[in-house]
Image (cartoon, rainbow, N blue to C red):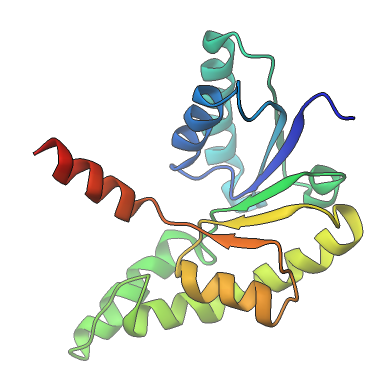
Length: 185
């Protein structure tokens, strides 16, 4: 039996990564992660290095025996992963600006989770996720795919229905954060 879990985060240079790392640190006793691979694309290399350095410092301060790896090579990272998380923005922030502004200029909702903006983002993101699933079939066929990429519902539905990856879960932290915020009030 393995002594710890391997998690691969596609979109590892994301500003959401520190929150994810904090979650793994806080839950280490019940979710013993041994390796976390933060993976990004060449255009995101600078952010990956900045966020990855922070993640390494967080783990070091926690004194948890978690190894953080930074990579631009999905194939290397995915080998034998137990969980693959996705938090990608295909087209980066320039695409988000267009997703929000173009619909608004036409009097429609411009937002990444629904409306025309969500559809734009889904049309860019679904093919990338389906390509990722093809890699997972070869490199980590038993892994769970946990999607944080918006629009989370459409991406997760595509993973299951078109990618055939039944071990897919779609998550969004906004409802939980809203619930906790309201509870505090």
